[in-house]
Amino acid sequence: MKKLFTNLTFWVLTAITLGVLLGHYYPEVALKTILDKPIKFNLWISEFEIKTTFSEFLSSIFISIVKLFINPIIFVTITLGIISMGNLKKVGKVGAKALIYFEVVTTIALVIGVLVANIIQPGTGVMTEAIKGGDISKYTKSAGDFSWWKFFWDNVTLQVLVVAITLGVVVSNYSVRERIVEFLTPISKKIFWGLHKVMLMAPIGAFGGMAYTIGKYGIHTLLPLGKLMLTVYITMALFVFVVLYFILRYYQVNLFKFLRYIREELLIVLGTSSSEAGLPSLMEKLERMGCSKSVVGLVVPAGYSFNLDGTTIYLSMAVIFLAQVFNVHLSLTQILTIIGILMVTSKGAAGVTGSGFIVLASTLTAIKVIPVEGLALLLGVDRFMSEARAITNFIGNGVATIWIANNEKEFDRRKMGYAFGHVEHFEDIKTDNLR
Image (cartoon, rainbow, N blue to C red; front, side, top):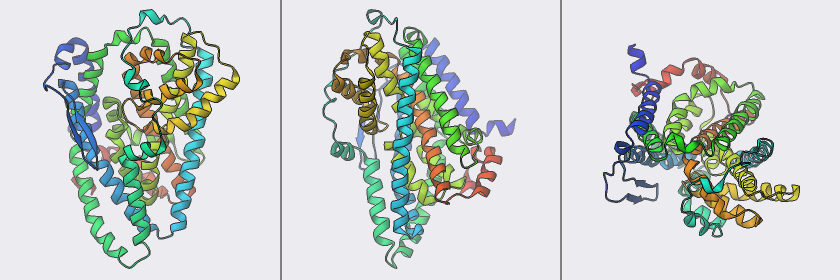
C-alpha cells in the first residue's frame, strides 16, 4: 500500500478520474473564473499563457512550468551529445536519417487516415444544422500566411536546436570542449533534478486539464460527431499497435514494454492534452533505456516539430470527413493532392494549440472544393481528439528515437532490459536517487 501511494502514475490516474467527475457533476466549479484576463509570458526559452478559469489555471500552470525546462534540456542534451559524439559526419548522418524517417512514417500515417476515413465514412449522415458552430475566423485568416521562415521564427524549440547544434559543432574541434563539458554537465544534472520536482505537480495539471475539458464541452457533445471520434481513435490505435509495433519489432524492441515504461508520461499527456507536458521526461527516459544522449538530443526536438503522426492522421481524416459531410465527391487525383499538400503543411503544425486548424484551413483553401466553414463542425470535439493526437505524436517520437538509435548502433540493450524490468523504480515520487 505504501508503495502504491509513492507511485506517481497512481496519483496522475486518480487526478484524471477526479477531474472527469468534477467537470461532469460540478462544471460551474471547474469553469469558475479566477482571473480577469489571461496572463501571458514571452521569454526566449518559452512562451506560455496562464488561463483564467479554475481548471485551466491549474493545467496551464503545470504545462507552463514544464515548458520552461524543455529548451534548456534540449540545449544541454544536444550540445553535450554532439561534443561527445566527436564525428561531425555522424551528426549530419543522424539528422538526415531522422528527417527521412519522419517523412516516410508521417506519409504512412496520412495514407492510413485517408483509407480508413473512406472505408468507415464518418461524415455520412451528419447534419450540419444540428451542430453548433464556432468562430473560425482566427484560423481562416491565418490559413494563407504560412511560410517556412515564419514557422522557424515562431518555433523557439527549433531555434534552440539550431543554436545547440552550431555550438556543439564549433567547440567539438577545439580543446575548449572539455571545459564546456565540465561546465554543462552539472547544469544538466540540476535541470533534471528540478524537472523531477516539477513532475510531482503532474496530478494537479492532469486534474485541471480533464476538469476543464469535461466541464466546458460535456460528454454529451461527443454524440453528434461520435462516429468521427471513434474512427479517429481506432485509426490511431491501428497506427500505434500495427505500424509502430513492427517498426520497433525490426530491432527486437517490444512496443508494449515500452508503453508500460512511459505510462506515467502517457497519462500526463492524456490529462493535459499536451505532448509538451511529457517531452522533457521522455528525453530522460529514452536516455535511461539505452538511447545515446546525442541521438535523443537530435531526434526528439526535431520530431516534436516534424514527426507529428497523430496530427497528420487527424488532418487527413478531417478533410475526408468534411468532404463526406458536404457530399463532395473527391476523385483519386484530388485525394492524392490532399496527401501531397498535407505532407508539407502538416510539418507546420508543431504542437501549438490551433495550429492544426490553420493547417487544415490552408489545405481546404488549396483544394477549393470543400467549404472552409466546415471547420466549425470540428471545434466542439477538437479538445477530445487532441488527447489522441498528443499521445500518438508522443509515442511516435519515442519510437523514432529508439529506431534511429538502434540503426546507428547507439543503443544499449542492457539498459533497456533494466529499465523495462524496473518500471516502478522510475515512477517512485522519491526521485532524489535517480540523479
